[in-house]
Length: 414
Ligand SMILES: *Cc1c(COP(=O)(O)O)cnc(C)c1O
Image (cartoon, rainbow, N blue to C red; front, side, top):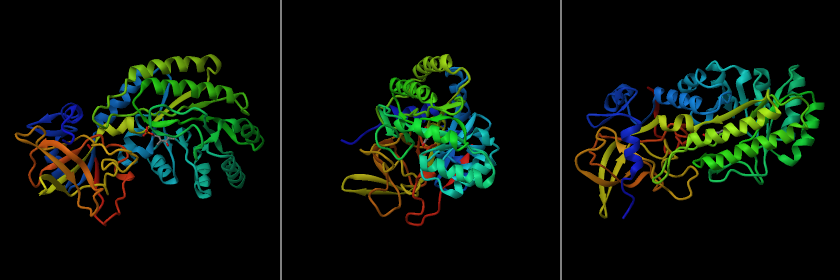
């Protein structure tokens, strides 16, 4: 027997967004009506109020004084970034393209951090000219930034991204600990800081990002505690006081059957203790949390339309106009080791009458083009709308949209 309906799809479909007349509603609009408004399928839809209330929740629960940054790569749709600009304290970017979107949205350059290995000289020039904070990922990059600063006659604002010796336990994606392309190994940072001072760069602080998609509050708290402790040690070698400390985020969202939502209150308790430890030694250091998916993943859905019902060897396939080329993560090909289903529903008959077990596939000529493998859904007809939940992060821009030459899906913020 394949996987059947579990708590998550019902939870997501019935509680995350309201259902009226068995049809999902986003931003107060029935999905069928929204589909007409968008004009064609497939499309991504993100709910404004959901994003807003997620940020409000974090502000309410997390210790006072913690700054929230949005990691733009999770969802760089300009309208979403514009909305975020009015909600969060800063942006984290990882390319000149993201920098343009961030600045266009009105975010102040002093509140933008530019991380990522392999920044080109053109990107460094643009970033120094813009006045954003450069998160140095290597000694080599530090030299290049100093050269750019000299050339432009501007003192670059920099932070050092540290690759700590510990890693984030239970992270869906580990980004630190051991050999990494990210950041500077902690042991090399003291020597780097001495050179940084001699180069006349404007030092702001440290950036530590241990990993992403963590659903264990205990593991997140532990990583945050260790990050602050390491930063305080390294700050002794810094050429100027530690003004800002970005300790990453890593807050995960439940995607798959059996996964439970993160215990945010427990994260807040741990962070409160960590914040107090920082305050004792460095009362003036700003503490920054950066997050992507936790702010936007659950606010978004991907919508495609049933083109055909097809039977093969006793199995039923819903063939849709959407697929892995537009939603790579839901197809299981974006970092999953064992493929699991994202929560899905028939958006215009959430509960339906009869239910059936189906596999939802797309139009691509590859068996990888699978959006849901043997799930129980309401019986769907040609023209019905398949909804993939938890799709507000790492959706469209994390997908190979050129593969097989179909038009790109639209995006709307409702
Ligand atoms: C990708 C990334 C993030 C965002 O991760 P989420 O899991 O979406 O919260 C934050 N910081 C850095 C440095 C990243 O590379």
